[in-house]
Image 1 (cartoon, rainbow, N blue to C red):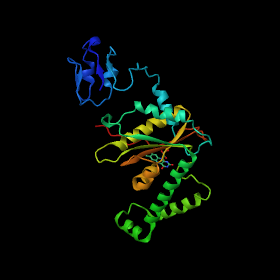
Image 2: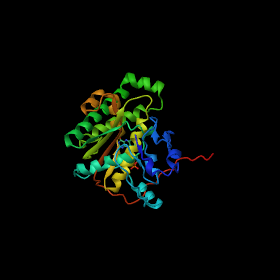
Image 3: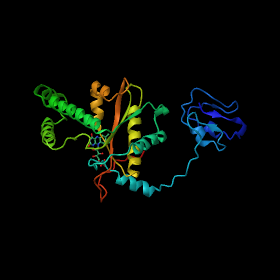
Image 4: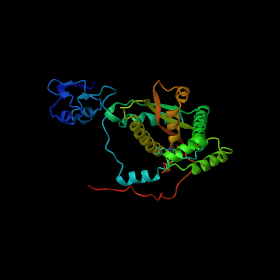
Length: 277
Ligand SMILES: Cc1cc2nc3c(=O)[nH]c(=O)nc-3n(C[C@H](O)[C@H](O)[C@H](O)COP(=O)(O)O)c2cc1C
């Protein structure tokens, strides 16, 4: 629990007003167990007299990123599928992961753990297991019995397109041994317990998105790999092979490495449809 040192308190009530769980009794200096440890009280106290339950007080620097700079950063952030054959130092990967302490999580529950896969053997294993599961899934979908069922009940899935996709995959695998991981030197797995009521998937995608932005500022490229998420979802053995805690699955996977490509122009993309009510 954060600690309030009342000696320095000027009773400005800022902490009380900013607390999302109404947990602060400033008269007694007691914080109730309903506290979600979000640290707003620590962040807002003008006297720096509320101390966090982990770490110490760090004064916040004013952001110097302009809207134009953020727009430029966003425009330049592309999925990287072509990496240099160069290891990313573990210290750099650790700094990516350490910055996650700043990223939000539903109710500040922070149920996720991160696994850094960065040995060539393990990245290849992750690639091959995921690729084999993908091929099995496609094979099943295009098999005569299942495809008849799909044609009848899910007409939006185009079986012919899947058959072509399978053909293209088999052609590609002759020369490409990293169809899933794009020969990246490292993959970050964002995993957490499977639960009907948690918002771990949203947390993971938010953490991975912030991580990809931060990685870009460090000169690193990233790519979300949904195939890995689906593979972990469907295959318990894979969870065991990558030493995930019991009941955990991967909610987001991000390849990381030094990019081997540079983009000159912005992409042309549709804006989302916007409604104003
Ligand atoms: C949730 C999610 C899952 C994705 N899964 C994959 C994947 O499995 N393999 C891949 O190569 N790209 C994957 N991507 C990357 C998208 O294909 C990519 O974002 C999209 O084509 C737009 O290109 P850009 O990221 O360069 O702007 C994924 C992206 C998201 C957001």
